[in-house]
Image 1 (spheres, rainbow, N blue to C red):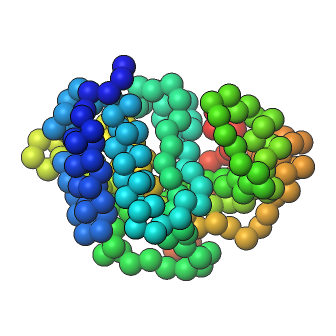
Image 2 (cartoon, one colour):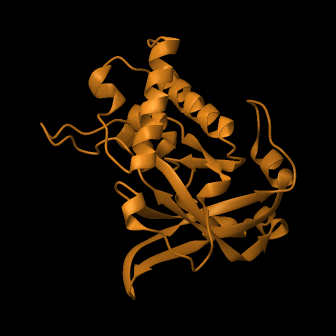
Length: 214
């Protein structure tokens, strides 16, 4: 569909998202102000925000891939995952803590983290390329924290996938586990059956299996 926003609008929105992150405050979703905003616009805002981080001295450490299940993609009316950038300051030690006051609407998701030994580049990366570039796989927790209103307080309208993509795919942090799964086990298909139990204070909140990722 292409872009509908100007470079100036992109830069302003990126700066607004950064100010919201720094102050842990909610802002109006981009789609509320620009109803015709496209996925290309959203990723352009994200890229401009990433540039601000790099300019301030932050270091890119990886990428977050989201909306990987068929159910979530159907709910968001898209046919592919989204992505965001992981910076050095987003890594939280296993067993560590964070301050609630530093976040807007924090949530936790259980993930699998692929730790690479080689870079992956280009648009035609296949599963085998990922295996070849992977050193090991570990369990991880992703800290989700979107800076735009999930449901707007004025009228109850929900934000869209374009809003979260503009906001670095709602990515705020990651906890990487300590138990490494060798890449050979991934090649043998073991990863598909990796399961996870997410519990809080001993109470199971959610469960899942990696086979749901597409």
